[in-house]
Image (cartoon, rainbow, N blue to C red):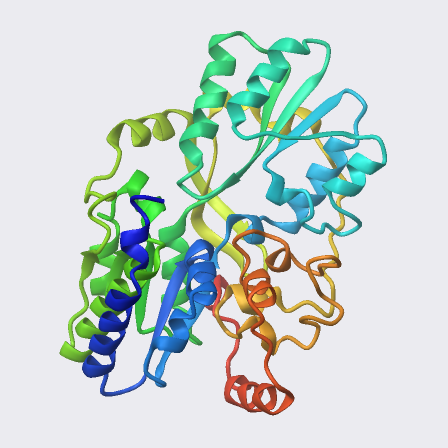
Length: 385
């Protein structure tokens, strides 16, 4: 905490909020891409410190939430196999598939284990040569280097019983899908600092120029977010649209070149389905041919998966930024962290979980007003190409 408390200073936060109030002369809608940023904004009441006309739009930056339902169902089928040790980070265990989740598979006798690193799963494969060990590789560019390293090490060690169920998504194509949508309402963007720590932010100046939208790379602490918002508002008020780095203590323009080199060796870019959004071109990674033997989908060949989303769940609209979580009629009623209808209610980065955990429930009057305001909005995902 020694190096975090200075980024949570109340007086400086109030000063930054005052500067934003002084800058803003008209309403603006700003997208924060990352679910971690959403949780920090809601937990610390940052959105409530802003001028009334400045709205924070919650984006699709939760990799657990956007993992395709079909892949969740394949994970459940693989995890239920007797010969499999299925490894995952803890936040995937309660993500609902069509008929259950990984916790239920575990309760039914499946060998499902929470690990802290994909390298832990590699070690399990070494110690259990008679079992197939599968790691659920979910994440954005931030988690991808460790997942790539696990596959490289597995090949170096000659392991035939380790594989990766790949759900790696890329953030810049998702931002572009939102910005180019006919229903887009975003005027400024806070980019995810941890993603940029790996990939840099060289991809953002062309996006900012193409869509005339300021993009500011931002961290996750209250002062990081307020400074990012201040910079976005300053650009909007001045009529500028540039990519800025407000997280220079972590992020460089080029990013981590060694990590990028590893990613290019192990993965190749592919089209990818985003849960609740649809297919976004060139927005994901898959294993290259040289590493395809470690692809769990290829190894287990799960067929006949038929996915069914809950008709009550509007998590797709939440992920597109079309509505706030509390605008969903099921929020806090049929859908709670104990009985989730969608991944956004159970993920540690899900917007619905943030609203529920920090008490952001709308009154019936406010909900009706918000619904009428949003009634003209359509999906703002990749389908609007």
